[in-house]
Image 1: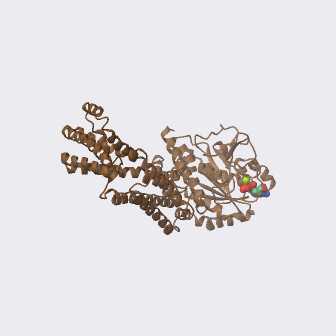
Image 2 (image 1 turned 180 degrees about the vertical axis):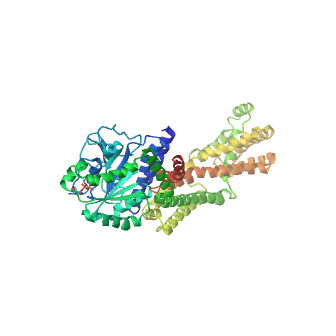
Image 3 (image 1 turned 135 degrees about the vertical axis):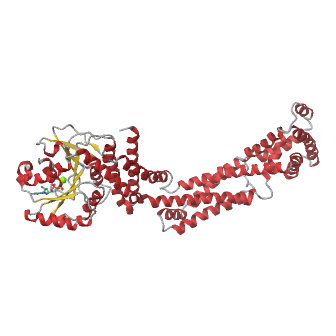
Length: 585
Ligand SMILES: Nc1nc2c(ncn2[C@@H]2O[C@H](COP(=O)(O)OP(=O)(O)O)[C@@H](O)[C@H]2O)c(=O)[nH]1
Ligand SMILES: [Mg+2]
């Protein structure tokens, strides 16, 4: 098979496998796992080999049925030897055991076929309870084994994709024909009948073998089964036969002593297997159509979870954007945006005259001392991350609180709708709020730490713009020289006591004024707006985004599992379309 097809089949089977495991996680959905496991088996065991153009023989017969109905006995009848362990102990057969004719070439499943079942290295009893299968050579007259392999399967006692039922589903997916065994006393048990419906739905040809009745009861039982069981199921390719209670001698040597029951049975397969290629292609094609037709039901096990997780994500995202909006509205667009002024002060440092500046610097070395004090003051302000509160702290705290309240309120109202909300509501009872706040605080610290770099960047952006207009730049450099002198005078006047606002704000206002004068009010406003945007981005990057991503991942079934489920839900329907298309006769 081309690598792309191999990958396609493996991916589709794995998507079903993912949904199956997902369904098994919750008891109220576990039943949905059975058809999913069967779907995966149909894809990898029937559709895959057909798509790959593998030879249709050997064909596969799966012998299935309730506990103790006589599956192993029927398998013996089919292969013509008492090789399968018929055992009065219910549930003796725990893994699939296949019978092939000793003289036919050994069957080797191609890549991926039989999925998680591995072949037992050594022959062993059929009650080994592991995800294995074995293939036993039968040294009998060929009979139907010339082109069929007969699989004796574990019991269908419960409708579950746990225990050994998945092993039988795996083989049922592989089967070209299913032999459904039901005994006279248990022909209408609920679990086996449900499996029967599943296989009928998938279009598998089915031979029903009713067992253990008195010979004269054969016909009435067949009629009864057709009416009471098949009458309530979808129509399919079904024939019903009876194999009355056999004697010990007949059981011992079915090939010669039970021919009157064996021959009609074997004839069914002679007909079905007449054109092996046709049988194989048909069953693969019908299976694909069945899956496509039932994909809604198959995917439903994950749909409400994905929907709940989508709602959760939307809620988190809404909280995030409201938090950011609020920051912008209540802080950034406010009248005072001090950080911009701080950036202008920072700009001062950059405004030395080149060359001449060096001369001035050394010439003014002594008198510059007061300016260095001012600079030192700036250093104190911005050099270490402010431990004390930042001006926007109250707005951010309020925004965070609103975010957290919104989540809590939503969880409480939706508590009954989906387990996810119940879990969130419950988490708030313990320490969810505290954990959330912890993430917020970490974000705040990171944000504060980023302020120095932000102020630098704003100052540099203005400086770079100024380099484009040398006249303005030189004028400002002149102002800076004047400021040096002013700073000296100011510091002397204040007796060396630095008073932040008194020095810095007028300083910034002075530069701002100069900029407005030379470049226009639009320029300063533009720079302020740019600084606001960057500030908003910083809040998003350091606080809102990490908090939102922590929240998004929070539900145990969230994060990667959500992605994976979503992927499976999105990918399965088009894959089934492609499969149906590819298997078109
Ligand atoms: N005498 C007799 N015993 C039967 C017949 N069919 C099944 N049994 C016995 O019923 C028990 C269960 O049959 P088995 O084929 O192992 O059922 P399975 O569990 O469905 O594989 C075994 O002890 C069989 O020997 C029959 O036609 N005649
Ligand atoms: Mg058995």
